[in-house]
Amino acid sequence: MELLSAAVAAVLALACAVLGWVLGRGRPRDPPCVRGWLPWVGAAAELGRAPLQFVERARAQCGPVFTVFAMGTRMTFVTEEEGINVFLNSKHVNFELAVQKPVYCTASIPKNIFFTLHEKLYIKMKGKMGPFNVHQFTGKLIDELHEQLGNLGSHGTMDLNNLVRALLYPATMNTVFNKGLIPTDKGELQEFYQHFETYDEGFEYGSQMPEWLLRNWSKSKKWLLEVLEKNITHIKAYKSEKDNSVTIMQAIQDVLEMEKSELIPNYKLLMLWASLSNAVPIAFWTFAFVLSQPDIHRAIKEDIASVFGSAGKDKMKVTEDELKNLPLIKWCVLEAIRLRAPGVLARKVVKPVNIMNFTIPPGDLLMVSPFWLHRNPKYFPEPELFKPERWRKANLEKHAFLDGFIGFGGGKFQCPGRWFALLEIEICLILMLYKYDCYLLDPLPKQSDLHLVGVPKPEGQCRIEYRKRI
Image (tube, rainbow, N blue to C red; front, side, top):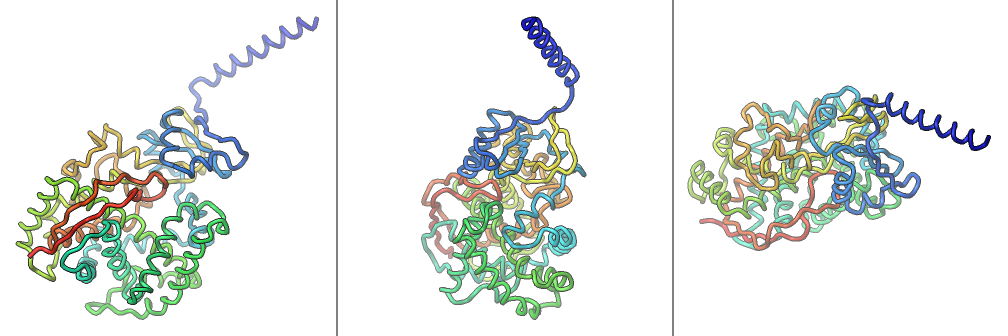
């Protein structure tokens, strides 16, 4: 009797399994999940140790769509083109909900305040820095970069990363904020840079981990907030010498004074990081790629000479029309962004979305990877090669990038500073290669695989020799 009961039970179980399989055919299902061994912690340790390598291994094992469970959070990665349209355009995924926790952790802006003010501030920045207004910053950027180039002397040898920082840190901050934020004393200036670089390097960890676990990062964060708070009155009082225009930070500060004035330093910290953390390493990679390829380097110098003449003008200007006559430089910047794009962009799933034959449940962070999408040969033949000429096909006159390119994000909340970033890197490259003969002394470095968020930094030094052209 017992044997009969067991047999019946087994048959019923098999029947249920078959019925479930039949009914489930064609229905979406959860993506494969990498959970790790520890409850709640999940795969956090392995993911944090070398995130790009970890995601690459997970993609090889699980396919292009998979979920990683870490620190109590489900992150579903889409590493190829499937799901990009859902990520960029679906009303069931939300950018603000995805970033409000990192914003709170890194800038101490409460989640509800960020959610309330983000769109208003985004529209303000987009208006000030949009493609039709961005060239109002050209003159200021040129003056600032001339001033920083004057500090290089007639010749020298320097790590390229440090050189780019020395040029773009003060030029960007004096343009976006205004003069006065950057200390003039060399010792104070170095202290400012050290604290920002500590904050920037630890930003990804600080966005997820308790602050008390990151003592040096927390110290730098507080130091920067104190400096930015002291600068509020100075920014408000600043008047342009040439016209009555306001800086980007003045426009944002005006909004915050009516809403949450006590959070002005916090938003300034967020703006400081957003202004420098990606544009500066992309400028490094653009210089490095150009200088490592003699044919491209030579072509750019010939283009610059055809527009501005032989070297010798100490205070040359660069107009919008002259920039249009130097398309190869913009192509090089965009190609550097393609090859050194962030590991992931994130959205919060608020209602179930279908990608391929999977259903991504509410609560997941949906992670799309520009890094891997930009290596899809369907969009970018020979994807590992630096080929700026591929951008000839982009309709940049109408502010359109190549298909498959999401280096600035996409959808409703694309990076509002993308045109400003392109402009400052282009001008920096033009002025440096017009004034100096430059040579790399080290091979092109590998990119660091330590971070998923933001543009990857170089792994190791990359020295440059420069000599003023006569």
